Length: 534
Ligand SMILES: C[S@@+](CC[C@H](N)C(=O)[O-])C[C@H]1O[C@@H](n2cnc3c(N)ncnc32)[C@H](O)[C@@H]1O
Image (cartoon, rainbow, N blue to C red; front, side, top):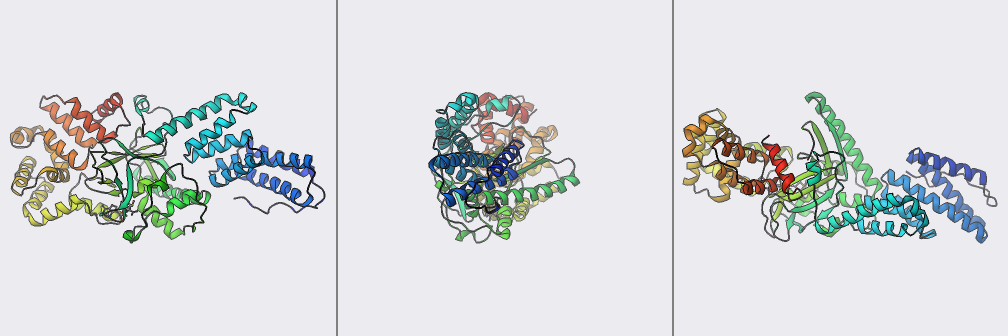
């Protein structure tokens, strides 16, 4: 952090030119050596010395202009170092101060553009780079500046229209660094939820696969977990680093602090304020109001309740572990019959509808695996610190309480009794208990492991095949109830192939869009689907 008073007081009359020169050279050297913190300190001393001198000695106009030029350059350099330290608030202040002295200052314009880009304020960043192009210094930096201009234009377009395309990256085998993405907020708003506290709701119908939002992480921590024991240890270390990074980010950037402050601590959620969705729009500037600093206890609760483990990451191997905090996505509640899924690409979370969503419906995704029986899901939500209030849990609870037979079937399956027979009993039971439509999908999803084993077993299919529903009927009902899932698609493809049936491409693409979203176009989607069944 910058020390405001770490310069030596000076005799008012003279400006120690030598000391200034020395400070400037040393600060520039530190900047080149990428020793950001140290260079910030020396630029601070330099700027304070110059400003002190101006305020005490009232220099003549020529001398004043010279001093201000030096201050402008030092501010710009300090901003660059602060940008590297992700101290966006201070960096932006320095650029604005430098541009007050010289509104066309090339370095300050470029630096301000880069800061605004990091803050996802694409169109204002674009204005800075455009203005910087008018400076003669732009000629030597045309390639870099044009790169920034193109990036701003692309991201501004993505952010405005929600048109994202990851196909090239998928088809290249995820080679190179992950693609640049913008933040995007689709047709959603935050409202009170029947599940708990606040939730995210669709304001228009959203088709399966369409994007709901794209949100950049406040902080992430990632690594490869090699074996189980050291894996657990490594996870703890990563969690600690992650917590430190969030704390640092909130200290460095007031907007981040403002956003993190609105998150739930998991208690008395119904009393929480419902923020306007506009608060999360990338173009929003920092508020001038001071915010209370988050105390450590509150911060830890916020992170416990809202951090997500990156579970469906395009292009990462299975030992990969990543944890992060995505503020707007944190308003999405869990449901065991979710209608959305998330993908993680670089520092971004992309949430898309995994089945058609009607205007007014709450957007939900799964915090944990929902292809599990009620009891197992209850255990999982307990470890998350809540009792799931979703429709599927309520319906299954009601039916399970009144239908002893389902419990018997479940117990039989646990003990490894005749798989085909148990599924047949459940399917017949559902007809008698008047479990219809989507609700059948709930029960099939709950006993998914058994359905999966049954449809993958030649013996079971041979013995029970004629009396069990067709695999595509089961798959469609599960996908309609809980959205698409790789495991469901795998069973469909393998089941149909075993029976000598072709998998209809249209059905496969529909299921694939539910899994990966429309950010992956046809050819790339096929490529990913090929990967599911090897
Ligand atoms: C990431 S936050 C979701 C947004 C939160 N409802 C809010 O008002 O900020 C996670 C918390 O929401 C609540 N929650 C999410 N899904 C729920 C569900 N299906 N049933 C009950 N509570 C849920 C739990 O308190 C959980 O700890």
